[in-house]
Image (tube, rainbow, N blue to C red):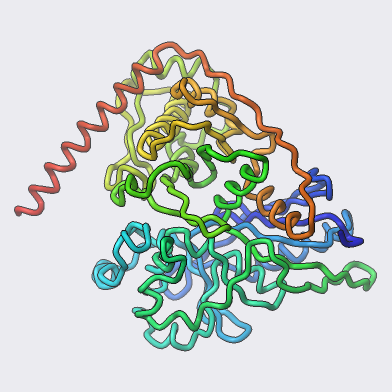
Length: 469
């Protein structure tokens, strides 16, 4: 261990970015947060990376001064990349939630490798970030040619602080279309586009890349070791594996609900259901299903920010108030428009129906990814207080666990650093979840699934008519 023993972890989400300071014993000493700013530039939405960098430098300086931080690590949300020429961005970082124009989308989607190669379905918007690189190339054919480096999002920040450009497999393997999991190599898209030389050499997640010299108040300078970043949900997966979980299903919740089940065969993945193979920090395929559960919950609860009572859950079930998919793009029901059916809910009942909806979507996704092993729930939805208990009630044959800290992506990033320097401070503080005692929940699930089947049949008929028109 260095004289400066605490670790700073930037957990960089799409909606919220956070800094956690952890002691050598794995305790959270401090935290701070900000909201990344996205703005319009030349007809597309991009990140104000300068503002985020300024916050990060300031927050890190405070952490060094207050807690003797000696190392910094990065965990980043998926779907995002940076094009770099020399020491500057050659194009601002794109917001992944925007769709290319239809004619361009058709052209670039024709270039995407087969699912059997990348295990990455063709998804809307920039959920496959190779798709967004192709979009930028269509907008400006010289742009990518004049770019010398393509960096994944966490690696962009590792580079900004260390000065060293690196690749990392968990992020490249995150439904980007740029990685072939079974070959453990870049996909054919990378070679056909001539991008391989723009991909820097690989470094393991958590590996030290360099040093950041940070100025403190009074003129003092501290040297901070900078470590290679990691994809956030993969980081959470690594955290629970580091605690001793082996054959388990991880439900990682935030803006996205990302579900990993390494026991699911790759042959069971359905590209039409937002099922894919992520790649672990150890280069292993990780069968995954996902939907934008945190975003959907925020949309469907319609501004409700108070707690949700168990009484409102029971009321929604008794009255037959249903939220049906989907309130955000992606997920196992593509093309479906989110809506409520049943009696008009009160504000709290609407929020309760939104929460039950996310639980039922999670439950259905667990069936699709063949989850029968223990379940670990991590992330923001744990804080609702009811999510885990409701899911446990729907999965009586599986043990369900939650973590006391609910910040698995940050703790996984820290665990990767500790492993590099010979430490393993995190105890297993997960706790078994008691099933919520809610009358009628199973019958409500059957009714919800029945309504979805009706909607899907109608959607299929509409699509047939459109093709025949």
